[in-house]
Structure formats: C-alpha cells, structure tokens
Length: 228
Image: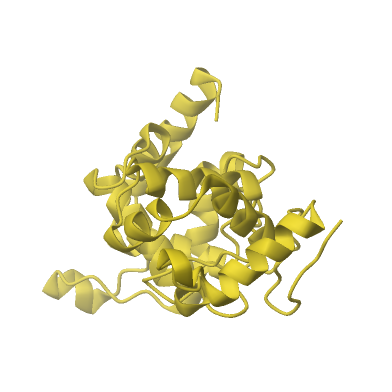
C-alpha cells in the first residue's frame, strides 16, 4: 500500500510518544515493589483503541475493516493471533517495512491490547464473493481439500466458519480476496514463511488459491456464503 511519507512519519512519531507513556494506573504497592500491575480487560480495551486510533486506523480502519483490499480486515481476529503477528513484525521474523515501524516501540502488553480491541469489533465487512462458480470451487477445497494433491481441508485449521483458532490460525471469513490470494501466493513461493502453509500452498494451482480466496471473502461466521 502506498502511503504519504509525511503521514507515515507523523503516525510513527505518535506511536513512539504513546509507547513512552504508560496508560495503566500505577498503585502505591507497585511504586514500592517496582512491579507493573496486570492491566484489566477494560484497560487493555481502552489502550488498544488508543493505539488503533493513532496507528492502525489508516490501513485497517478503527473498526478493523480495512478500506483498502490490499490490507487485511482484522476485526474479530483472535487476540493471541494479532499479538503474535505484531511480535513477529517487531522481531523481524515477519517482514513489512510499515508494520515494523508501527510496532517498534510497542510493549507486549500494548500488542495484546491491540488484539483485545480488534477482537471486540464486530462490524460488517465489505468483502464478498464476486464469482459464484469460483467460490463454489473454493468451498470444496476449503471443506474437503484436494486429496489428489495432498492438500488438506482449510477448515481443519481455520474452522468450519472461518473464525480461526487463537494464537495459531487467523480468522479468514470475510477477508478481502485480494489480500488472501496475495498471502497464499506468498506462502506458495516462500516469500512468507510458515512451514505448514508453505507446504500446502505450494501443492496448489494458482486457480485453486484464487478460488479459496474468493470463497473466504464470502464466508461469514454465522452465514456460510454471501455472493454479490
């Protein structure tokens, strides 16, 4: 995604300032012992909203639904999964220049707070399946895999409704198809590293990757498929 450099620099400065100031209350006991208190759910939710409004909103939207199909929708993504991905960006194990700059000064609690906030968002994605025939092919792969190519069903890891599994697998229901297919292609080529996904995606034809992405765009956590 192209972003005005001045805007990006300003956003990074805001994140850096936020990271240097604790938003969690410090009690007298913690002042004495030097131990940080464990943030409450409400404190994490407020902190996550603060970070989202300053740093995440331009690419992912304040409600977690990206206005740009090249960027992922993250509303309803498992808390632990979001925190883990932010940790990977910060360590450099997952590469993205914009994301690495955004998370450089975030603490582990900040990352979890972002996860808590976005998991709590339940808006309405604009992503839909645009081709029914392709989406139905994707549905077959998602639910049954491709036995002849030793490709397992996507539902085995991402769930029958595409809600994902905390820490391990992301929510895929209602994801932009452009983003999904880009990630699947990156796994297939090895540009994005994940042993399991690299092996699976590399055994799939590009048309299969497109079909799965199309189907996931039309999935909803409470409705199987939505086609425009």
